[in-house]
Length: 163
Image (cartoon, rainbow, N blue to C red; front, side, top):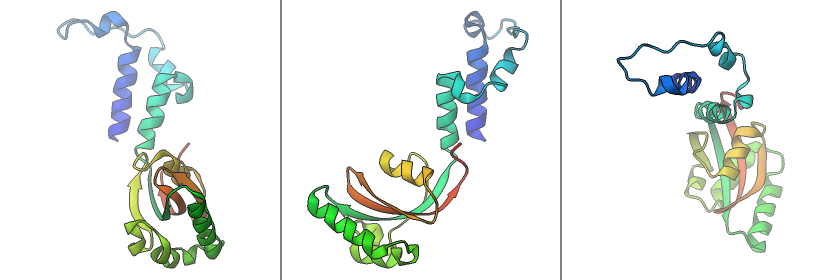
């Protein structure tokens, strides 16, 4: 709700003529050009340039997900071999994920089966965030390399939409 109100104010401010934006508060309200409002409401956000970028960012703030992960610290060959072996142990069975995370994860969340709980978009490092908010729910993804090391990610639930 807040994101929608903020976006409406940004769009309204951008649509006003420059002279109207700088007028005193006591002055007359600016007149809208014919169809000025319709221009913004009938145009796809992606074609609005900076306003489209703002729309996408604000919309992203409403997305939530719940995920678990297994972290293997490091980005050397030993870490790659270890994360691959863990991935092979899980195979295509998400039911094994929590047990394997408890035994193998280098993250404190491993004590909770790798659960990170619920979090919003842009809360995690970009590589992690992209997988959680783009890829299929209920499937083990990875390995994904970040600055922390290699991750296997199980997306348990996602609310909202990325479109």
